[in-house]
Image (cartoon, rainbow, N blue to C red; front, side):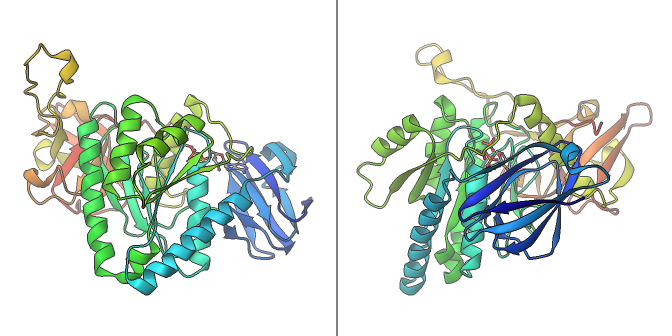
Length: 422
Ligand code: ATP
């Protein structure tokens, strides 16, 4: 039996679907949205293991129903709340929209917004809301995700960018047709921050060109999601990204210290706005294990689709057919670890071919757009394969690719990212 829920104006229904379970959501009447995506009346949405809020500006009635089980069995947590930061977030949207319109009229650049804060403060969620509200006003900002661990545009270990031209699908997330993706091979920038900075700079340069060649793209601006690592090196990398993307609006969620640090760094920068926002009480804390399993889920979705309806293809090729490279032949020692006057000679951006194919077993490997090995460092990636077997006797490698046929490019990039498809 469907279970009805009635929401009053500016209330939200917070739902945590159990991992591995599904339920359906239907808007019976009124207005309702999921992180800025308007729900269509009478349409059935299937929620698979998601944690989300159905919010209503006007009030509404929705129904939930379990899939093959009572709805109670599919739900971990459910409650209504009228204590939400949605008004604050809508005010930010209005500010961005005013800037976009002014930019379009004057042919200047639109707002470049970066959302920062610790892990689990709702950064990705705020990005979704701002993007969806921009779409409603016929703007298509570029979404950039700089989080290697829990990115929304590409599989883990990547940073990605994509124009968002339609509302974000409640069931499947961001529509990403042709994303711009850089693969660092690791779910954290810590092992090779040089490579992370390099990719951020490459991406910003390409997006700048795109914005300059199309006034509407430039005026729509950027919405940038950052990683939740905000201390030490993490903070340095956030500063680097803010400067590289020439961000002019920083949205700090729920972190007084970070807000005060950034406000003082940019105090003399007249174009910069640092805005503090409330963390929603609905944001769900995700323990380390959950993050790991959601990374594995992202990788699985890349190959098998979010509804498990894609059929990846397996191929076996001789070792000699695969040219696999790695960036960073041993990372440069920090200056503090060297004797006075000493120099680190190892190059964190050096690209070297992997000669021991056994190391590839179970790795996620990126197929680079590079046409020459020298281009591997700076080229974005076309897709990914998973190495399911390495046979040292037959000297062959078996890999899973999202579709059959030859790989779209000859050079592959490996890192340390492995998965086992349990
Ligand atoms: P990270 O830094 O780890 O990427 P984050 O700061 O980007 O985390 P989100 O991914 O936005 O945080 O939110 C964490 C989880 O909480 C997500 O599963 C999201 O769908 C859920 N969530 C966010 N806001 C709400 C809400 N109001 N009600 C219910 N769930 C919510």
